[in-house]
Image (cartoon, rainbow, N blue to C red):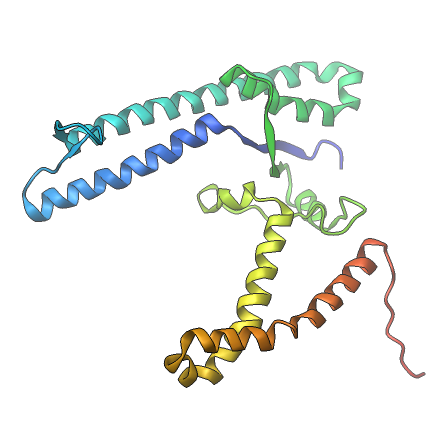
Amino acid sequence: MPNTVADVSIALEIDEIEKAVDKRASVVSKLEHAYNVLKYKGVRPKHKVKICGKEKVDSIDFYENQLEEYNTQISAFITKAVEYQEKAHDESMDDDDDDTKKKNKLGLVTALPSRVVHGVLGKDDINTRSGAFITFNNLKSSMAARQMVHYKIPFIMSTVPAPAVKDVYWSNVDASLFAKLALFFIIQTFFVSAIAGSLFTSLQQLVDNPAGTIRDILATNLPQQANFFIAFVFVQIGTVHNIGYKIITRS
């Protein structure tokens, strides 16, 4: 599908920006609390800047100043990132007449994130997240890309329709495939299958003796989960090694 990709955005790990965003979120929470105290108690709250100090400052003024500083800092990061991204995109468009560059589009795309981060933060050592967002020129190419197999090993690379930017949960984008699978199987198998199913049948015992009941439930149900994991391992082995499964029926 040549000339169908409009844009590729790779999620990067940029600690400086992420730390500033986290600090800003903390300041916003504290500022909202200070506003609520003023609204319902009619008193402007104060707090100590230093743990061992005696001087107190007005909480609303202090957090408003901090919020303005973080907004300015984050805005500067974003502005630089956009400028360098646009500059890199313009350079790639100018190089389209070069046959060598045309044959190496992937190398150009993977070079853009490092170029942006180096321009914004002045460093080359960066890490990419496990996700990327690809925009196509038409719906046909987008649907085709979703249905294609992009890697020979199943589940290593998957494609899903991208949600709106405001709906993206970026912590999930940061998490690796192994972390997602581990959390899913730990919660689904351990808490749901092993514990939740037995709690409803042991409510009275749980009220009378919580610790002993939970211990007995775990001792009884955890060994039974071995069958589930054995079946799961066999399915994974067959999937990774491309073993075909057929349903045998009588003719």
